[in-house]
Image 1 (cartoon, rainbow, N blue to C red):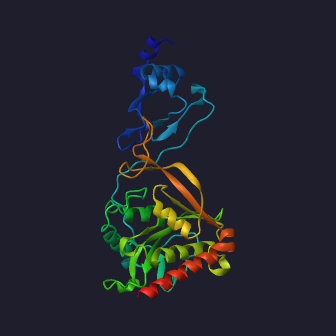
Image 2: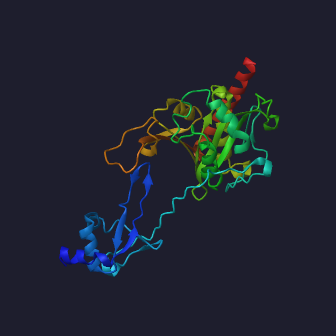
Image 3: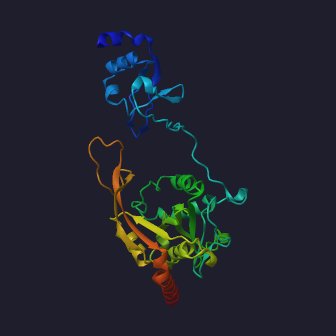
Length: 340
C-alpha cells in the first residue's frame, strides 16, 4: 500500500490514547494515536506516526481500558498483556492510630509480644501516631540528617506514608521503633523511654531465609551511644537465632548503604557484617541527594546511587557473630555505667 492510499484510510480510524507514564515531566508515551483493525490501517498509522513503525514490537495501545494485540495482523510472535495500574491522585496515606485499637503489624514472621529488649534498649513495632513526631523533631535539629537516605524522608508526611505503604502494608517487611530506656520521655511515659530512631526488616524472603536490615536511622540525641549497638544487635539476634531460641532462623541478613556514607559502612562492619561488594547504579534518587549523574536521555530524572552490600549469614553468626555482638552490647553497657 502506498503512503497516499494509507493516509486516505485515516478518517475511518478509531482514536485511543497510548499509555503515557509521566514522572517529573518525563513522558513515556506519545499522546493520542490512531487505532486500526487490519494491516492496511496499521500501515496508515506507521505513515502518520513514524515512531510507530520503529516501535511496533515494544509499544502497546490502550483500547477501551484493556490491552489489544492482533497477532495475525501485526505478524508478532508474542504479546504483552501487562496493564499498568492507573495513576490515581488520592489523599495522603493515613496510617492507623493506636488510639483506635491494636495495630496490625502484618508481618509474615513472629514478633515477640514484649518486643526485643536489653537493659538499655527496646525495639518495638513502629506506630506512626506514637513514634513519628519525636523522630522528626529530633531529626530536624541536625541539618542534612536525611541526606544519605535514598528517599526524601525530610519531606513532611513522607516518613509516615512510606512506613505505612512500604513496611506495614507489605507482609515481608516490618518497621520498628528504637526506644532508649535510659532516657525516659516525661511527655510520653507510656513509651518506656525516648524514641531514638527507626530500624526494620525490608523485603524478607522466608522462602530463601534472607532479609535486609533497613531503614536504619538513629536521631542526633542518641548517636554515638549504646543505642545503635543494642538496637542492631537485637535485630541481628532475632533474625539469625533459630526459632527454638526465639529467632526467625534466617540464613542471611543484608545491610546496604551509600559507599560515600562512611559512617553507615563503619557501623555495619563494627557489628560484624562482612562487605561483599558494591551494587552499581542500585537506586534512582532525588537530584539533591549525593549521587552520580546518568547519561543524556535517561528515562528518569534524578541521580544514580551505588550501594555497598554487607551481610552476616547463619554460619558467621554461629562461629563468631553471636559472641561478637554480645561482647559489643556488654561493652556499651559498661561504658554507659562508667560515665553515669
